[in-house]
Amino acid sequence: TLWSMAVTAANGILKHNSKHKSPQNCATFIQKNGPENGVASRQPRHEAFEQAPMYVAVMTYLGFGLVTLFGYFRDFLRAVGLEKCHLAQERPEQKDFVPLYQDFENFYTRNLYMRVRDNWNRPICSLPGPVFDLMERVSDDYNWTFRFTGRTIPNVINVGSYNYLGFAENNVDFLKTVAERIQQYGVGVCSTRQETGTVLCLHQELEQLVANFLGVESSMTFGMGFATNSMNIPALVGKGCLILSDELNHTSLILGARLSGATIRVFKHNNMHSLEKMLREAICSGQPRTHRPWKKILIMVEGIYSMEGSVVRLPEIIALKKKYRAYLYLDEAHSIGAVGPTGRGVTELFNVNTADVDIMMGTFTKSFGAAGGYIAGRKVLVDYLRRHSHSAVYATAMSPPVTEQVIRAMKCIMGKDGGNEGMRRVRQLAENTRYFRARLKEMGFIIYGNDDSPVVPILLYMPGKVVAFAREMLERRIGVVVVGFPATPITEARARFCLSASHTRDMLDKVLYHLNELGDLLCLKFSRRRHAPRHDLYDETDFEIDG
Image (tube, rainbow, N blue to C red; front, side, top):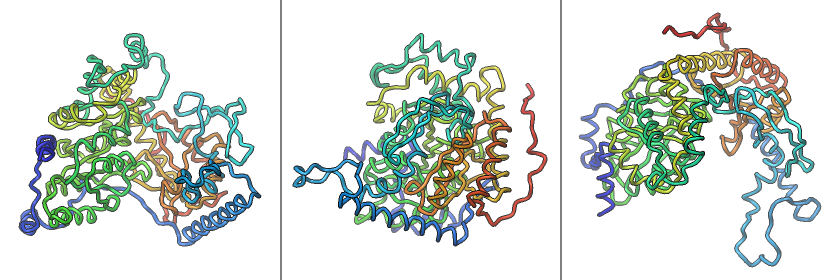
């Protein structure tokens, strides 16, 4: 069919080998490719996912049970008119129409989220650097509506933004070239890349710079990080293809997979046995009903998982990918710039060949202090996406000042600006990460993730403690993100700290001091492990680099 021909042509992209073995050849294939056991990682993995004591889980379920019961009671009061309902409702004359609002679907929003909504969507009124200002707001109706007081909450330590390398800055000297691009090209191109939206000297320079930075043949940039996943995955896989997705993948990856029309199967987080089992079954059984070989099997993973702080087991996944002739899609939104000796992400962290990763994706919204994303890999892959990507065909191209900001930040990291500021930031972020994680472990908190990950989740578990934690931290002038159900499992609500190279040791010590205080006040130190006290290596360090 024409679709099959298009897929085959497109996947010169991926060194396409659609000849996944049929069921009758499965035994021969497995025997030829060796035993089932995985390949050991090239770097020791220091990751922690400590389980809380049983009483914590019991109290968490009990807490949700109580608020649910009270929620139903309040719904009853609303139904009989004893309590006012602030949500949108159907008009009486529309009672014979299909309902627009489902009461049960909004139950969580009505009765749980609204009571704690003041802990989210906090507006800022300054640069989102290591310290920022928040706009003060109050509610007179239990968080159904807010009003601004006209005052600000100044000098709040920002441990919630993804400003990993501190490039969200307003230093006039650093932003001089960005200002020049605004004067030269304006703030928008008002067109797509396929029409008149390509600013040749900027977009092509950035794409070549990204390719050089990653060590691949070619790259393509997009104006939105989320759409880089959601709009490009459907161009790479379709009906008759299989996507194997990590269970903790970001929503953008999930949406892209669903839009593609491919069959989706989910393997356990970072679990190589679960992934290999699915690969074997996919090759042995083929497609459902017809049992024809899959046109393509695509493994989708992230470099750093944004809610867990865990790092992908990349060497083992590459080994499985080669063994079963699948393809690998690596999302480095949180890892590019943030890990690796020179900030080149998890491929550098594990010292693997970037050619072993078929599709490399990343965003400019975090480590680079800008907006947008990229897809990188073989030239045939990128050329195909230039013609078939929905983002390339329909979405507006990156604005000139944003493009220049990414170029500026990337050149700084690579040392192409003639200085060592970029490397200093990469090393400072690594030092801040190790210091912060080590101190939290010593205090007795349960934290998730890899020791190299600047995403640091502290497990809070109980819904009441999540709310109290967020409000108390803001009272202490610390801005932190708290996350609960349904964004996390119901028993694993947490606070997520994002560290930055721009955080000073004094800032981190202040955050740690208040965390220690709140940990005792709210009884949040659930860890049963004992950690050795910190060593002298965590003292102040000079990061000057020899020329």
